[in-house]
Every structure is written in structure tokens, then in C-alpha cells.
Image (cartoon, rainbow, N blue to C red; front, side, top):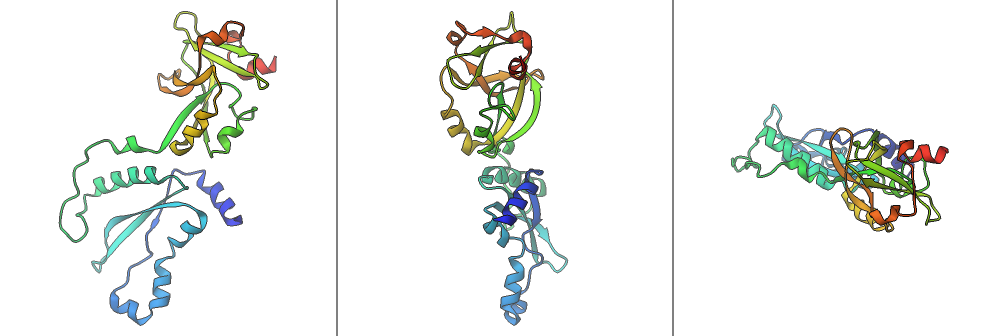
Length: 244
């Protein structure tokens, strides 16, 4: 568990880790001469993945000079399976190796493999921002903060007062809106459902436009929630309101 904590900190810095599937590959004759040691060698780059609870995907990568096959492994955190499969599809398409010993060509791609990336980018504008009261609902799901930025100039922000935890309501208004400070967090699709399920009305998740023109999943509110709420759009964001 101590090694896992250290490994998790390292893996946070990267999208994936790429290693050999095996450091080398042996002939049957070589294995028969020293089966225990050589089979142990073969597991050098794979055994740790089970111990650390990581995902791994082995891919063909061509042949050695002696014409024996060689492969690489894509390594990710747990639940990264779909992401690894998407990247693996790109790898195999780029290399165009035949399918094993069949001589059959790698099939043409039928769709964009990046569409299967198993993560969701979420815009937060209030108590879920880094260091605030509900941020733990993201960090407990191993979400990663991508950046702080602003929405497009089409939103108004209100402070809700009907909850023990202060929360804002962001409403789209293309006529009287302004840019609001937001953060973008990335979490796995497997965790996204439980995160959304915990959001109380009148808040919900919809599509929010960033100042760069992207439309991402993010916090929105039913318009009725602003009836008795104080508008804080002029402050520029939730942190600015809290500092008041």
C-alpha cells in the first residue's frame, strides 16, 4: 500500500505509462532449460499491475532481429480500460501490423477511437471548486483539476440561500450575461453518474459554454431558483462572493 501511494502520485502526472510487455521473448528450447527463472523474467513488466490495481493493455509492436515477436503494454489507473483501448486502437491503426500469424490486414477503422475516451470534463462554478466545501465530492472520485478559466459572456450568477452549504446558481442569459470564473475538472465516466446523482435541485448538469467556445458538461440551475436569490454576477465568480 505504501508503494501504491507513491505510484499513484507519479501516475497523476501522466495520461498513460508505456512499457515492454516483456523485456524479451524466449524460444521454447530456452524456456525448457530454465523455466522458472525465464517465466519470472517474462512477468517483470506485468506483475506489478495486479498489485497496484492498475489497468493494462498489451499490444503487438513488431518483431525482433531474430524474428520473434515483441509487444508493448499501455498502463493506466483502475477503470482506465476504455481509454487504453481507444489509444491501443490508434496504435494498431498507425502500425498496420497483420493480425497475429494469419497474414490478415488490420481492419479499417469504422469510427473515431478518441470518442471512446472514458472520461468526462465537468465545469464547476461554486462549492465544488478547489479548496471549497464540496470539492471532496470530486477528489474522492480521483477527479483531476485541468484549469481555472471563465465561461462565455452569456451567464448570470446568483447566491442561493436555502441550503446549509452556500451554493451559486448559474443561468444562461445571452442579453445581460457576463463572463463567470469557473474550473474544469476531469473524472472517469464510471464516477460521473454517482457525482451527478448527488446534485440537489434546483441545480443540475447541462452544457456550459467556455470563453474559448467549448461546450462542456457543467452546473446549471432552474430559473425559478433565482427568484429570491441575490445576483452576484458583477463580482465575477463564487470565490469573489465568498471573499465579500
